[in-house]
Amino acid sequence: MVESAENTTVVIGAGVAGLALGNFLLRSGVSCTIVEKHSRAYVEKRQRAGTVDSRGVRMFREWELADVVKGGSSPKEIAGGTWIDGVRYPLGLGDDDTDAFLGAGGDLRFEALDVGLEDLDSERPTVRYRNPDGSATTVTCDYVAGCDGFHGVSRASVPAEALTRYSHAYPYSWLSVLAEVLAAPFGMAIHDRGLAARFPRGADASRLYLQCPAGDTPEQWPDERIWSELRSRFGADVPTGRIVDKRIVPLRSVVFSPMSYGRLHLLGDSAHLVPPMSAKGIHLALHDTEVFARAIIAKVQEDDASLLDGYSDTCLNHVWNYQAYAIWITDLMHDAGDASYQGAFRKQIARAELQRLIDSPTASRLYDELSGGLL
Image (tube, rainbow, N blue to C red; front, top):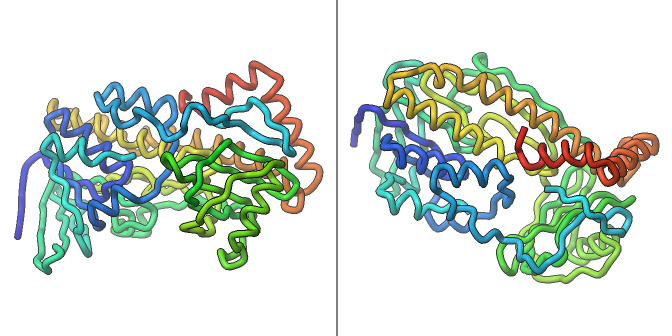
């Protein structure tokens, strides 16, 4: 089957950026099609980043999508905070909904297999994919939005010589654990044994993180060791439950430049990664999404291509600002704990910085603006 339509954007991926973009365009009368390789059940159930900062909340309200961020997953009666050597401090380290898009008549195609992008540097790029029944579909469009993540087909379709990769690797990783237990209390812990964190993922599940050497494997972390380390690093007993998933997450910062190639524009993790410590992956994805949505709307409704032409530069200026924040907060929180990675001197420097955040209203205000995504 071959499809061709004017003023159509094909969105690759139904993650945070893809679904938000689809809703923004749909509400503005601009046609788009979302192509997603997984099933709807998989998309709706998969665990993703759970933090939408102040800027993200404002953005959803402006686009009349406030219901997406209503009723967060952190029960109000559960205390949170940051623990340093077992002592709690009042330092606040600051789900996608397919129904909104489909309910408004959006075109969302699940289980689109073997997606391929062609003619990206022409006026009418092509998106090809195979349907579950084995038939093929070809869609020609005006623009392609690559929202399919770091390992997706979108960026892989750009010639290597057309992109510059900037990257930074950290000397440690995180053990990421999904457990069927309430995260009570939730927050982060800094300890000589390393960083630890626990955050709610729904009413009766939590995501747990433990700093570990970069070469560790999940097999080195049996369940009892995980619970023992959480108790030690938080300095208190912690509720336990069935562990349903554990994996090692390398910590790295990556930026690809430019974020555009011909009629393809990269959004979210397809263009950049930040370490999870910063909680800015979803922030950057949503920022890219809003910039791109406004650019497409201006081109379709006013024939003004200036925002689209400046998409990559606009986004990269914001990305680098938050990459700087991500590296700072990641180094700060890890250096303040286990000194075996960066040494005792860096540990004392990090502790002094943390104390400044606690004691100084000026330092705290700057931190709050960055963690809230306001800069």
